[in-house]
Length: 357
Length: 256
Image 1 (tube, chains in turn cyan, brown):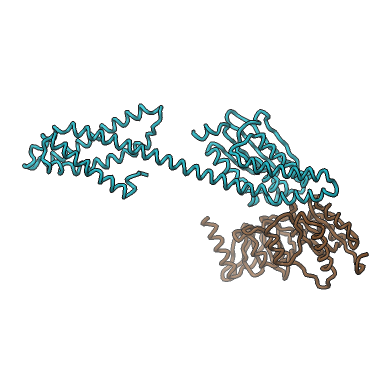
Image 2 (tube, one colour; image 1 turned 90 degrees about the vertical axis):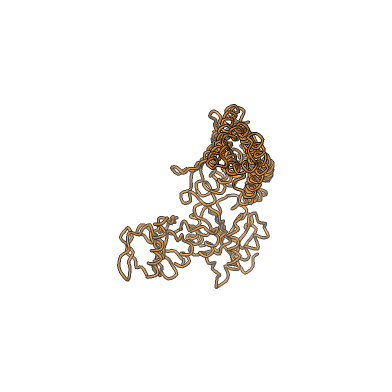
């Protein structure tokens, strides 16, 4: 959006600024071209309006010509050329008006006198155009900073939102109360195990809270959290829960967003295994190819409710978390094939590079 | 010694062994409870009820494939239920509205005994308060979720029918006949309550006594009084308001 053309107030100020400018130009015409003041004014009026708008058009050129170190010489050449062309057009506008006026007796000598002022007009036009270009770049820079700020606030807001919802679902009431019930049951029949489970539950929630506050964590930490969660659920599921891990140990230190894997595994249990009398196997695969980390979670889908409404929420959360972290460089897809529900995620291994791409 | 000389038989239904264990442990302290049986899923529970006629059932709500409500709906004769849940806001609200007893996991011995005492009192009553199961089932489901499956008795077996497999419903007094693949099954509910739970974009009430699955409709015959013909040849009467509803739905589908 053009910063001046679209805002009536700014446009007015801009046009008002051209009044003293026109005065200077008129003075130059009088001095260099020996025009009378009235001639100078009549001549300038249409040409100046034309040139004023022409300078504004440089905005569009600026937008498509970003100032980058590598492209600087090209940009300079582009603008020098553009300024020269614009100045020439301006001179042409003057010339045309002069010739039109020259048709009248009174102004017969006007074109000749004007031609003496041409170099001055050209120079002024050239400089004015370049000035417009620099102003436009300043506007662009300001706009970019603003957008970046908004994006950052949005991303932070999103991250906080998803963190809150993630925490709330981490505090997953079903999971919590069932775990507490198991502990309650174990107190009389196996007190040692009751204590063990109690501590594991506390550790799990503590980890959720601390990991959730960091911007990025190691894959090994996320895996540990997920394993803790699965250990706790094994008490409830018993034989109905089986886990298969295929994780490349070399990837332990890769940077990943916190709480992106555990919610997916929880999803697999809630909407897959829990619905099946015989339970099933959850398989987690983590591998790497070049600069990308591939993660896949697969579980058998339940026959009656392969895609329960709740399933979307957990997945959407992880997706927004990943998007806030990596932008469009990360991908997530889910699919239902042959009775298996599968979520595949690809994350770039160096988030910095990915964000600036 | 327990009062009155009455003894009660109890059935515990929960997919988690430890959860069943807590209840059994508590029941061991109650001399009036003579029999305690356990089941780990709704299907087993329905069969056990038919075999042993327990007085009271402690029923976990969240179970795979057949939840607590669906299982209770199919139990004959119906024992006095005490529902058990870890966390289910919708269910709790429904329970409060219909004055149905429930326990929240984890529960203390005192709370458990209080619920047991209430259930025992209920068993002794001549005129038992039967919980309105279809209303409960409906209200316990999160809002904006339509009925996606129906648990029906197929002889001695229980089948869980996904709603897409149902051809039509027919009202029969206090029951509804659920027809799928030419076979009919009876379910204790009214057609009106069914209508309120079913996805209106896929099922239409074409007549006071019939709701059809629109996907089964081949054509509409007649002039003045209509007949709906389904893909397996079944012909069902369509009332005037029914035909309007049907046309509206079919039009809506076309524009989608």
